[in-house]
Image (cartoon, rainbow, N blue to C red; front, side):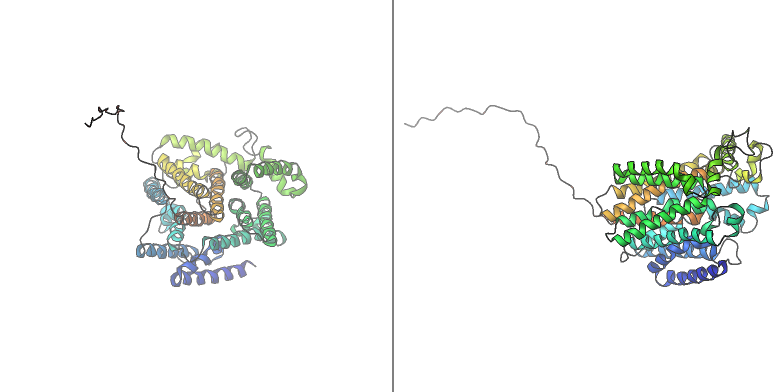
Length: 459
């Protein structure tokens, strides 16, 4: 089955690449559901330039050419992204000066791969903002995005009946990403899209289909056994419900409270044991309290990261800095995986310093405000729901990046950049509200008594 998927996805990717050059707008539509299946495209002999990367570079280049041919405003996140790119190059330079002798990071093309994993998928933001045609409504993009989410959720069910090597070894579904945390966070971040589409259709059949797809996303999150993904899904759902109505919010809180005691009946035993083992202790007992190994890793990493940050708070230690400098602050006997930071904020703080962390927060805040601004605008209900979807997804992203390096795992973040671009386009098309002109006050003049003239006597 995996080989068949490789062939099908690679053929689809080649066709999408041709369409990006011939008809950019339809190429961008075809690219949407392909991105979550990026790892199933065949690799090229050139390191860091596989078929999926070539698609993104092509989409970005063609979109930029259209921007040059049709001048217009730049998207709202342009300045934060340019700042982000510049500080990434600075982090690479600092890392090169500190660790240039290590062949893994800086031999041949490896330097390019280190930078690429930070910035590659952010290019989709510009590709979809400039390349999307006004003849194609934004709803088309979100429906194709839903197709990608549905494929990713359904693959978890397939993996249960036809176990993959990853599932057999870890007891968790890796989905299209072959990694449980990436799989769970992807479904948690974009699993609300079926609910958005369900609210925009009046057909009972379509609503049932979309609600069923949302439940399938929840099942995928549970099967991934990712605690971070479960937290992200709950937080995004609460934000979404809060803005819809207070009764919806209270209903969701009640549903979550009801689901917790039923978890032992609903969730498979092996996955439930992982959730229950969070505070049952592991190899770090005595160092990180009674936290389970995976949770304890994050605690000891943040402690080590705080000490590394003090050493170089402004520009950080450069790319790769946490991996090479953290062992001196980690507990004795820590496994090698502990040297791989499990938090995007930790990576940016240690390797890029306060400047890189500030640029990341600026970027995430700008994207979140783009969604809120559209939701609060005078746009139609459909556009407002897309803005709310981006806002709820950003809440999930912030939590995910605090507990994982999801932002750097580009194929998981791909829909974020597409959503942000389509939301920004929808907001840009809203006509400006007419300005109500206030009457100009007349200058104050002192009140004077009218002059009394004596009557004229006519003889």
